[in-house]
Image (cartoon, one colour):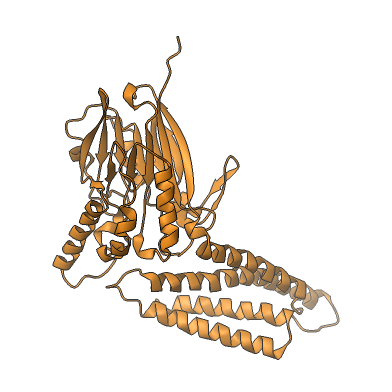
Length: 408
């Protein structure tokens, strides 16, 4: 019964979508072809979703199915909503005629062709946007630069540049040239340190195997390359034959970081030294309000004081909201990812930044501040579920640390 409701909703959408086509065109061949194509896609998608294998998780085929589903039904939904509104008006108009007009005719007036044309035009907007996101947007990498100033930044770290990436999701990749282009972009930033905040795969360690040599090409800067785990790195979104296989996959995922020359921080910290100064880089395992909470900030910060300058790597930005931003140990800068900006939204710098994910996460993309403590949420390097990006592009972040100049 639970599966019947979505099917019923899709059938209603199909009926209304057919009304759009039928109102615009009376050509029998056009209508027949539309019906055949719609029926084939409907049954193919129902079959694909009903036979989803929980032991395999998301892969290139499931990405294709999700992308096709969105391409087919989001535009049809938009068109259907217009016709539903028209039907409400038709019922209202028919009721007036029934009680007022002496010349009784058909209760419902005929559909207006121009309304269906509006519906079709409106449907073209999400269709073209989603198609762009799948074909171009998912690899439209953007380098976003940010400068942050701190009064207590050690002198030797004034001007240090951090390249931050997150949410690789290597199991979704399908274009080696585009990934190599992104790696080249990372290297072109000539940063002093490279930080990666988790989700190296969708589920299985093997997803990263074709990309190890490519990611090894990320240059090893003078202050090193460090990483943490994300929620997808624990293999918790699929069914495993045994606990031992799940644990082995987790161990293999952790080893992937070594294979691409990143130092994986597991609830621990390292001191980054430059000249006569040092800062603490703290890395916690995943900690999310609605996700796995393996992160242990207390353990990762053992031996550190409030006065140490600290950069925290924590995959899920909800960790900052619920534990970090007012923590007495004072974490100067937190780097996160996880949200992907939902891979859908509108961003015009200085004008608007919106995505539906903002109704779930207070910090979902870009820079946020609380009492002199900052979090930067990377929009993600890869993609997951929807195989594309609309409005929220894949990101390589470059953050320059500056020491605030005291006024004399």
